[in-house]
Image 1 (cartoon, rainbow, N blue to C red):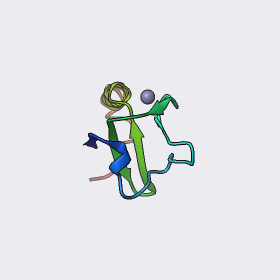
Image 2 (image 1 turned 90 degrees about the horizontal axis):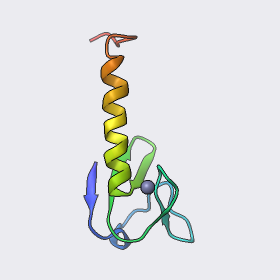
Image 3 (image 1 turned 135 degrees about the vertical axis):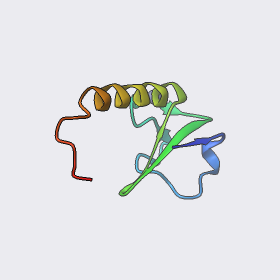
Length: 74
Ligand SMILES: [Zn+2]
């Protein structure tokens, strides 16, 4: 994940960019200034800072409590 100070200066458009601007991947509300960018295999997403914070905590909680379930072979 990468902090983006000004989303209008992103050279390659993330997945959820459209003609009306950028929307947060998590809550769907407009992004106007800064964001957190996550680059995945199929493209990139943008999140509000608070939404990225929330998502990070949820990922940790969900993965930590289930870390021994269906663990891939090392
Ligand atoms: Zn959001």
